[in-house]
Length: 88
Image (cartoon, rainbow, N blue to C red; front, side, top):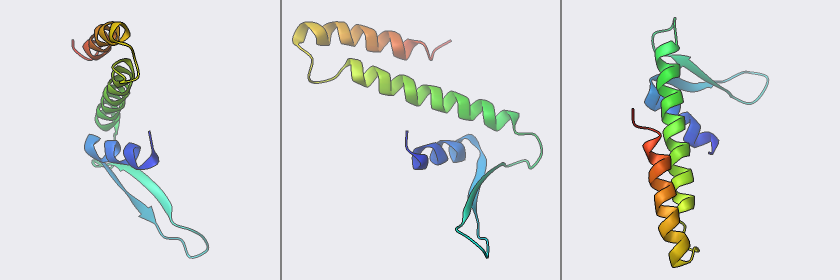
């Protein structure tokens, strides 16, 4: 995942993000909980979003176009199993 993708997931999870402009150097990025106190809710959301994104990336590799027909059928089964890990 790229830095921009991770920051987008942090925002989706409820974190405030931005940058602090220092007078003696480049801007410094920050991520803070929206509540300003406890960030457990945002961390749990963020962890779930990252896990879902990684599951989907892995499933897409299993369904890759370069596979043979037989591999693609097996890959589809693997992709379904990977995606199912995100359901209770």
